[in-house]
Amino acid sequence: RKDLLGLEELTAEEITHILDLAASLKEINERPIKKVPTLRGKTVIHLFYEPSTRTRMSFDIAAKRLSADTYAISTTTSSIVKGETFLDTVKNLEAMRPDIFVIRHPVSGVPHRIASVTKAGVINAGDGMHEHPTQALLDMFTIRSHKGFLKDLNVLIVGDILHSRVARSNIWGLTKMGARVTLCGPSTLVPREFEGIPGVRICQNLDDAISYADVIMVLRLQRERQDQNFITTLREYSVMFGLSLKRLERAKEDVLIMHPGPMNRGVEIDPEVADGPYSVILDQVTNGVAVRMAVLYILAQRSVGEE
Ligand code: CP
Image (cartoon, rainbow, N blue to C red; front, side, top):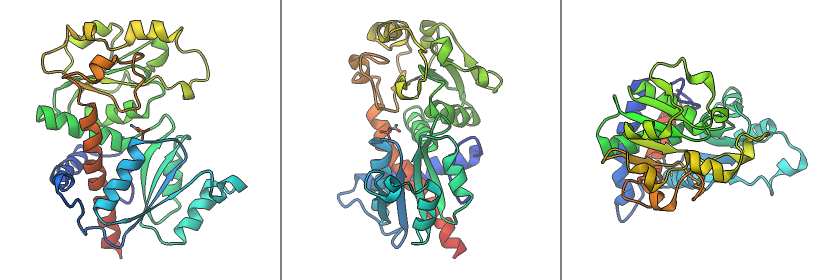
C-alpha cells in the first residue's frame, strides 16, 4: 500500500504486521540514544488543519527517531491564509519531492482525495468524523501489550460515538482482530450505522456493560462538531455516562481504562479514574510513538522499493 487512510480497508494480517513491527521498534524509544538511521534521506511533511497535541508530536518524534527529515505547514503563516486551496498547497509541496504527507483535516475524506493525486504516501492523522487509524492501532497495541491478545476480548466504547473517528477506526480494527465491541452513550450520540457489523452491539445500560468489559474506552464529547444539542447538560451527561470510581466497582479486577485524549476531566471521566490503577491512558501515548514508527517505516520502505 502507498497510504494508510483507514482501518476499514486493512486486513487482520496487515494490522498484525503493524503491531508486531511496532513491538520490535518500541525498544528504540527506551535507549539512551533514541535514533536509528533507517529513514535517513526521507522527507515527512505534517499538514495539520486541526489542533493536535498527541498525534502531531508523536508522528514528529517517530519520524525523527527513524532519522527522517520532518517539516510542518502552519495554517496561520503559510499561503493558506491568502486563499490557496488545500489541493494547490499539496501539489506545490509535492513539487519539493516529499516521501510522506501526514494529514489531519476537519473534513472527512480529504486524505483520500490527496492520496489520489500525489505519488507520496499519505497517512490519515484524523479526518473529520471518519477515521483516525493510527489512534486505533496504538489502542490495539496497548490492549495487546496488557492482555496478550485481542481475540474475544469485550471492549466497551462509551460516549460520543457519533462524532468520533477514534470509535470508527477502533470498531473496524477491533472487530477484524476478533474482539467484541459494545457501544454505549446517549441515544442521540450512538448511531445505528454499526448495528449490522458482526461483533458490534449497542447497549443502553452502562452499568451492565461495565460489568463484562475487559477494556473500557472513554470518549470525549466533541462539542466542536456538534451543530445541535445532543445532550441536555454536561452535569446530566456526567451522571448518566461519566466513568466514576463508584461505577467501576462493578468492573472486572483487571479491566483497562483507556481514553484517546484530550480528556474533559469531571465530564466523561473522573480524575480518580483517569489517574487510577486501571488507567493505561499514558501507555497509549507512549505506544503511539512506536506504532507511528512502524507505519512510517512500512510506507517509506514501499517508496524505497519503487525507486
Ligand atoms: N488522540 C488524539 O488524536 O489527540 P490529539 O488531538 O491531541 O492529536
